[in-house]
Image (cartoon, rainbow, N blue to C red; front, side, top):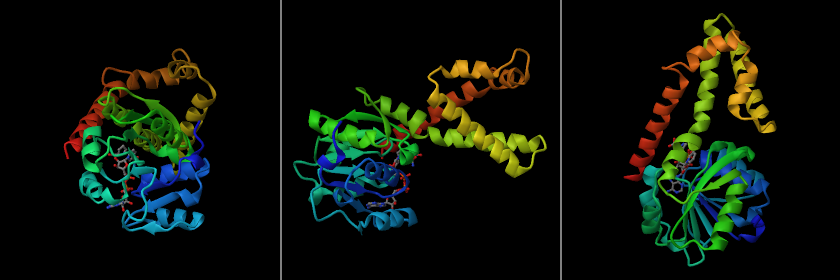
Length: 273
Ligand SMILES: NC(=O)C1=CN([C@@H]2O[C@H](COP(=O)(O)OP(=O)(O)OC[C@H]3O[C@@H](n4cnc5c(N)ncnc54)[C@H](O)[C@@H]3O)[C@@H](O)[C@H]2O)C=CC1
Ligand SMILES: O=C(O)[C@@H]1CCC=N1
């Protein structure tokens, strides 16, 4: 695996939720802080705290050096004008890595003037090194570019490379947005506990720790999720009663299918600009 220190200067354009989650992963994995340049005209408290912790300056605009890797982590809605301002910092050695939902390799290539682009879709557990990122290589990506991108992405967790760019809209809908579905599940379980008479804070504690515990169990045990589910389900018991509802014709599976399809559609729309 490529040593992050060997990658050279990395410029993060957009130090928001996702950009910072990735930056934290790089720093934890050994990217020297002196090799990280943060660009954000309106940094939030978290960006300021990270900059202070590592002695970094947050620049209001991209200038000053042509980085070896430029990570585009702004909202898809403003990526067009942001890319226009990047011409002075994109040199022949610059690899562009985008995390913007929906923004195609063709748009990235046209906007940045280089085919050395990698389109990716990470997720926020990157912040603790437990993310998963889908990635597709652009037309002019060489093996060393791919290795550099892979090393940066691997600092955030698992990496899955795809040959078909279309798949990234589906990746976005499943794992990019997915953490929000799980957090919403916690909210729904807690609300259901309150409906059954539990105090709100106790219901939230039960729901939250159940999801944390179940996720940790899956991490520790490669047994398929369906078998882990069966292990909870006594014949004719309480779980079976609940799963009759959750796995019914109008249960979680069709609901999730609709939710993921909606996210995928939105990813494609964001790409239209
Ligand atoms: N939040 C998430 O879970 C995920 C987000 N993404 C993608 O990451 C990108 C960023 O999303 P978030 O981090 O959630 O948004 P965010 O709003 O937290 O961060 C965006 C940052 O860009 C900054 N910004 C605005 N104009 C700028 C400019 N001209 N130059 C540099 N920075 C500028 C903002 O001040 C802000 O700090 C989006 O494209 C999104 O699709 C991808 C995967 C997951
Ligand atoms: O909601 C969004 O558009 C971004 C992309 C995936 C997660 N957050």
